[in-house]
Image (cartoon, rainbow, N blue to C red; front, side, top):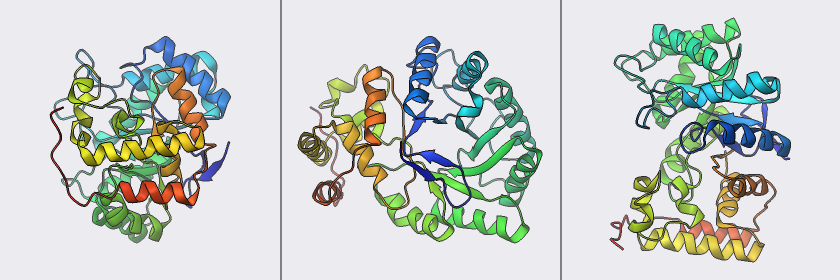
Length: 325
């Protein structure tokens, strides 16, 4: 399986990152174990999770995904075979959020305990914390790197300006710097990354692992109306795409998939893999077919005409309202 360097300073990773947000949410523990086994067998050894997964589920408090991954590590002894990313900063409870040094120290130890490991390969700030000086946040990340608890650090949900400021702060003070960015980027979410973040990524040679690579499932073509979203785990997230423009993107994906003997999901991921700056899109799977799509997407090379077609149809000139179909 093709691998790429995760930025100028990160490890080599496969060109798809397995999303762990579904573990303990829409994928139970036993099925998660089977998926992780199958993914490793197929060469997908890059896994992304976060301490907050899956706090949004009634009865959950966060940490469920990390806990299941940790149990799998303990059962299989395969920790050394996995490149593991997890995140800190989202709210886990009253006062348990942000990027202040004391909280990050507490949070990383809790993640390490749940994951049943002594180190995290890539530890990301899940969201910017404007109330905490960057020097404080980067200082504690530097401390964790020097202690061996974290190998590399990254950022998610940062603006281009704030990301630049963080990188320059690391340089100025001789602190560990972000080597990877985890942005929201896919065929129907292009402008912010391409206009505001890509120039920073290219200047500082960062790796990029976009989340919501399939737009919460919209780019697979399974949502055609509001009714389709009503009982779906991520249905509310895709309603803004249920309009003529969004459906035109899905139609183009179907046409390109047909021409390549592929599926819309594989084409959407292959498009992302082909984009400037992108290292490895993050995508989750809840069944064997979806996992197969992730594996096969790594082998799909889109021709210039297919890329042009997808680029043109996904440019959003106007933001129409979602349809009520």
